[in-house]
Image 1 (cartoon, rainbow, N blue to C red):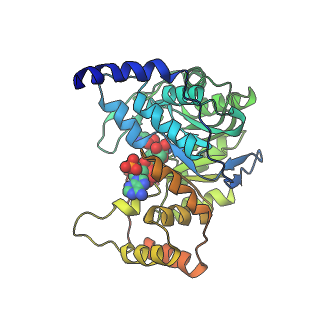
Image 2: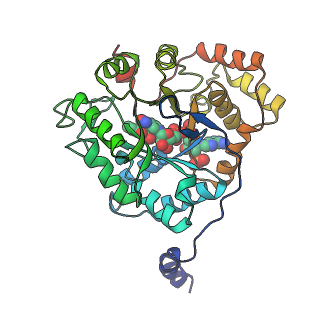
Length: 341
Ligand SMILES: NC(=O)C1=CN([C@@H]2O[C@H](COP(=O)(O)OP(=O)(O)OC[C@H]3O[C@@H](n4cnc5c(N)ncnc54)[C@H](OP(=O)(O)O)[C@@H]3O)[C@@H](O)[C@H]2O)C=CC1
Ligand SMILES: O=C1Nc2ccccc2C1=O
């Protein structure tokens, strides 16, 4: 009889999923950062629907941008339940549809959420592989599709996902794309606009052609990739920085390799009674940068918020920063950040 239960369970789940899954998010007092130009208050930690969730969708031939993956919907609903009020998605993740499902099923008040989405302009990966844009005519087309998939009237922040504008990847130039981004903001489809994966020299070029300046740059940032030039440029030009892959120092050691921060992380976790993920996220937050993290486990999602309950003493913050700088590790886009200046 066991096998009959296996056959019926998915049917049961899909039958009830649209009717009985309203959730009550954990009540949390999540701090905000203020965006320099619009003054909007952005919740200070985000839950990502890319990385492992993107890979899940990309690697399963049965899943496409138009198929709802129940596992990802469950994960996003768990994140909302845990109290996340800031979700990060992108056209290239193929997870907009799950975000839309999770928002619809959970019944969470839209006005209490911050949603970030990104235009897929096409990619040249570190191994040279070229991927074409998801929306050949540009960000306007991309966001219109995204809003429909997510069942939203607007997003809080819309980003150009990367600086790969050339005939191999897409049909428009960066200048044309930015004009469309300005129109998107003017029409109220996105309250704020910005970019991702732009290094300082690319930001400078964009800055010169932009009438509406980018509000945000979302980049890889953690103790082993501190990006001092970029951070300084952003500070001087009122561009707010968001950090993806903030937990990288936890994964930068292979078996047998002892990275310089390992003993310090152990010691400070003991001192502050926190876990390594909380220490690393706290360091990012305390440096004035917004961490975007993710997990597939509700318990880890819930633990994230402890980062707002403790403060690193200045000497500990500085020690982490100094020792982190003694070793360099970048996970994504070496072709932009290490070879192109
Ligand atoms: N703009 C861009 O180009 C990019 C944007 N992003 C965005 O940033 C988001 C976050 O990126 P990501 O690299 O996943 O971020 P993180 O550095 O937060 O890493 C998350 C990973 O760490 C694991 N993890 C979480 N907590 C713990 C723990 N306590 N112990 C051990 N492992 C743990 C999770 O696995 P588990 O599920 O097992 O908990 C998950 O696989 C993405 O989802 C995406 O939205 C990411 C990359 C590029
Ligand atoms: O989460 C992400 N994983 C990625 C891999 C390649 C390009 C972009 C991304 C993301 O934004």
